[in-house]
Length: 232
Image: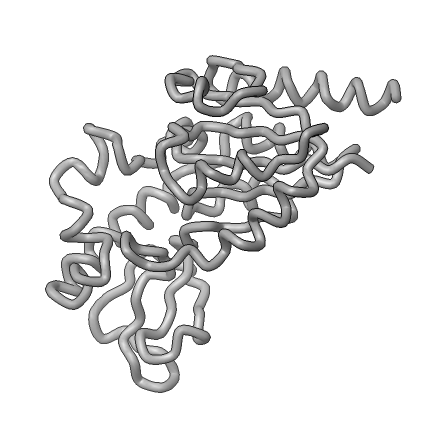
């Protein structure tokens, strides 16, 4: 069974109504990232950080997977599919994909500030000051903030190294280390970039460019891949 690795970025979630980091009309508009998404911000004003992520979490609870998410789940009928996502939402999971590696954390989880091994699922959007782990430490968003290590980059590299097909979806290819994952694809790997703005694609040779939104392009591409798998 061929291995498909998917690298998904913010553009894919934006089609479901999730505000993105660079969205001028989104939740980030009135905040510098240094004020809401960094260890320094947490030390300076944890209440503001929690409020900001509560807004993002509420946005997520009100959003649904789009046709692109469901199309990727369909790939599992004929392929060994691994998703590596820069997104902190759970839309891939809710669409039915079974193997997702989150590079930048998960919005619907919180973790202890005193014991990072203590991670909790959230079934509501509000996380407040005074919400503590079982050891009494304040909970923080389970998010990789700017300036923190991306611990899942190493397992992501291993997945890309084994890919027969690589789909890069909804990403500007500006955010490292995630953008550098493409360079680990083996020589035989067929690579696609699905994004309306493929301005950086010249930096990554060998990509088949599909300059469309994922919700439009993925159902078509996935059908083509599944039909090819059935014929082979």
